[in-house]
Length: 395
Image (cartoon, rainbow, N blue to C red; front, side):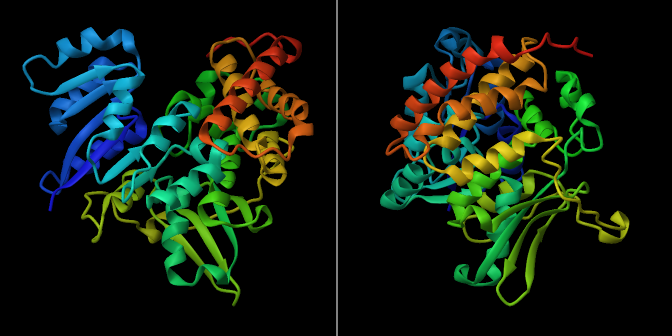
């Protein structure tokens, strides 16, 4: 039976890796729809290669060039928010949710239709509206399949026992490009330096989050909602080899770990396989060649974004949404040269402090979460001139 797939965020790093997995199994999958932000050429090329039925760009101004790029192909297309929703609503068994940032929240939530499988790579859906998102998924019968390598490893490790027997879970972090840098050097880092991730090739925003360890903090919040664990049951360990992606600690003292080469096609294939695992042409894990693993505790003094994310998770309610909104504002300012890398945690901390009196507020709906995100962004933008130093030159 052919399995129908829709990819949200098709031209990003996860979307491209998903396309590679599908290309290895053309008889097993059919692409219903592809969605991207504004990349006309990339989306059209992928649509031709995967023989997609429908493609959509979020940027409404790109409708004409997209239609021209697809001329004669028979592939239907659209542009703008309504076209994105049309793509989501087309018949598909699995939706790969890989739009980066809070921009992916609304379309991912719209994908929660009865019986659908959601390959979730948009962590902001759970960071900003975790309670509402998981409640609506349960109501509609949607299956949430974690596509991030860490959460996918934890989900697979959970198969070796009963969830009630879990004591703690540990997510691993590579440590990012600044793992061995001192505080002063980290604070002066440039956008080009954040792009030198030691393990993965990702988009600019995720590169910055990985360098600051905010990405790992957001993953802790995501894991809280995915697996229903308390904040004190979730931890992070730095593992530079990036072979162990997650560990489950059981009440009898046993630990189950998920291991794989650092290749996103592996967790993607796991999510796309409805019944049997897919055969993948990826390098096999050779432990003898690796030789050894090392581990270290994350340094929250040098990487305060992880501390701030832990605090937001502990506070609960809408604080994770505030954290995420402030971080997206600060990261965009850093990437555009209006702020230094060291300003990112300062903006986030000031913004979270401004919302401290509302820590108990829990967004009841996705719309509530988006409204809170907008307010957090407004407050964070106001802090940028007050706390930002002149951005260092890019190298």
